[in-house]
Length: 326
Ligand code: ACO
Image (cartoon, rainbow, N blue to C red):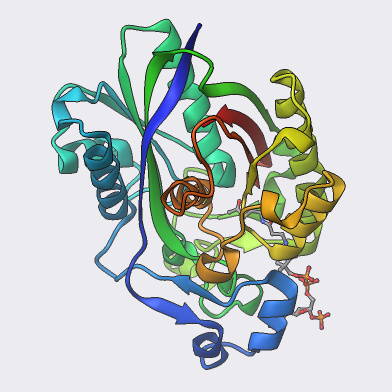
């Protein structure tokens, strides 16, 4: 049987680190509040002139090198991002240019924190149904560019970075086993960048009111996040004929340590079955799970044959689960 298999991963984190102590000097907050409410201690922040495509290019370059592939081997580039360099051209096209991927088509996917799993799902469909042999999936986010640095309720949560995965069609039982994707636009207003698009173009007044920044009703998002992530894990596992006990590693979206713990508890997972790096990087939206997978591989937490369950939740609302045999 043919499966879409991840043959290499990559990642990039900006060198600048913003700690909770640094944030105490910017807004009325404390390390204690941020740590107990979110589990976050520090996050990486891109330079002013460093964009999502710049970070995506670095993550993609690492994955290409690890795969031992040349740029012309890539047939398609899919970039998951909610912080594109521009409305258009797509960030995927900018990454294509940066990596000199002459033979590929390229497009973006917008599904917020679920973007990486959505993009993997699309990559699988392209690989299994088309003549495409190799797909580069990138998730790159400069969350700091849509953060209101005067809003303590949101500015402590997010970080910047990128992750990448290269997929090819392979015979055998390793690769993507199942996916479960969902969304509900009725919750759109709870997590939104209200202005800057065609609904409300940017004006001086809009900028003065901070409507071009991310706005979130955190506690309302929290309740749905836990329920949908558990549901996505169970449904994706069910579609693969597996149960939570079969999972070597759950890589959940890293929005908040309390959400991760609640999801793990409901799935009855042991600590060592759950990947956590939210303390070091915060919430990097789509890039979160891409980085988690690359880190888990690099640190040899996952090995050939292991069952890996990716689970996400984000703006839209969107949610997704995916099961891989590594
Ligand atoms: N420092 C100190 N106090 C703060 C801070 C801060 N940084 N931020 C908020 N507070 C205060 C609030 O003003 C409030 O004070 P009040 O009671 O006097 O009004 C109090 O702390 C409690 O605020 P809540 O928002 O109710 O705090 P909560 O416990 O819900 O934690 C958080 C907030 C961390 C945002 C949490 O709700 C959360 O993680 N939500 C889910 C986020 C998520 O999953 N997002 C989805 C993915 S993101 C994406 O798709 C882009």
